[in-house]
Image (cartoon, rainbow over all chains, first blue to last red; front, side, top):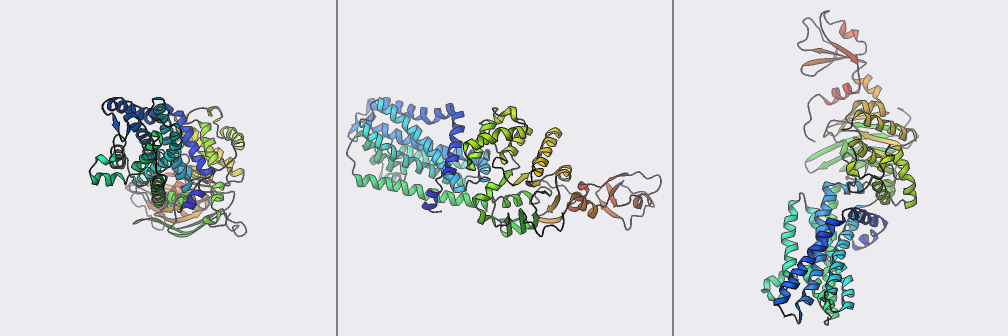
Length: 263
Length: 306
């Protein structure tokens, strides 16, 4: 599986898989909105309101300006991770939706691409909700920057979705996802600079933090929404890391699923 | 049917097909072929290798050895067009439970790249064909087992396939639902579609199938038309004599099968057996059927698990 074959798989068949998920999601919109939108908003409110009153300045900006981009990234990460693990695994194993789809002209790569894009879409949906609320609340001073952050968040969403698929491809039972959330989602929540700067941690935690894609994503999104200068080459470096991780994760997940389903 | 295969390209042609999962040798050299417009039944106890064989035919499992041709070509050569020509009815219902009956078909049609207008045209026809016409708007969760099964069959027909593969299409259904499905499958055959099905119901196999392939432990035990199999293995009649066998009964030379608490005797003329039984002996006599063939070939031992 190469990047080229994945790009070729981005066609009406993968879109058909994506649309299937959209249709089902419309039926289950309320519980879905609660987890993906309300959750980050509650965090935003609690930290923005609570910590914002105590912390005056952080990284040269108000705490609200600091935490809103963090929450955008967190919302993206959580929604895309959840969808590509728990929800995708339900379709793969419990509902046997994948079996039904693989009996049609849709190939495994197309199916995975459709699932991945759907998980990324949900990530973006959550991100957009946080952006709207954050902007209205005054936590994203640069409106242009917030718009520019969208494609960056999209690359992040794709990366989180691909990483989630790696976990799903290895899951034999639901138990594996407990590890996924404890060792992947939670560290990104606390160590990647969502609520305070990564530099506050000892060097070895910082080292771990920079392995996580979320740290790189926040490093680009925060200056954009806050409207502070961002070195283009540095930004590109961060984005390239996230994109490379996405490609590697998708390739690995495709390999694992291929072995698991057909061998 | 035998002997006509020379000129017609079989829809399915498998030869020496094998599948290993680690140490498990699920299929060990299965060979058979299916001619267009016929219905072939794959019979075997649980774990015989039926589903694995079907999965290989569908391209859902990679064969470990052997050759497989669909429509005269290896599956790799057909690629996507193969799936467009084959409809699958899996053993487990894998419908989308959260959306409506109609949406299930629409969503499925999109996987085949069928234009929306065409799907919209086909959906009501398929629902009517499977007697689900009134249920288009119902959620799948609200359907009975029989209706779900009919919907899975309707779904397998969305791209108008030439071959329909059905894995236990009527397991767990009540007789009414089963008879309805049989009638529809016979309609499909009349339309010229080729059917491959697995079943545990011998009556189903006898009613629907032109040919039957009996497999066990991953190997083909025998194949032929239901009647040919009956003639070959259990002759015309079965006489069941309970144990202990009557004194003075000489069973030498009779075709027999000891099933534990009774012995089954197979004879083309029932008098072959009855003539040897003492007058006061009790026995039951019936026409031999496919079930007798099946049990004779695969044994009476229970197969636990899968």
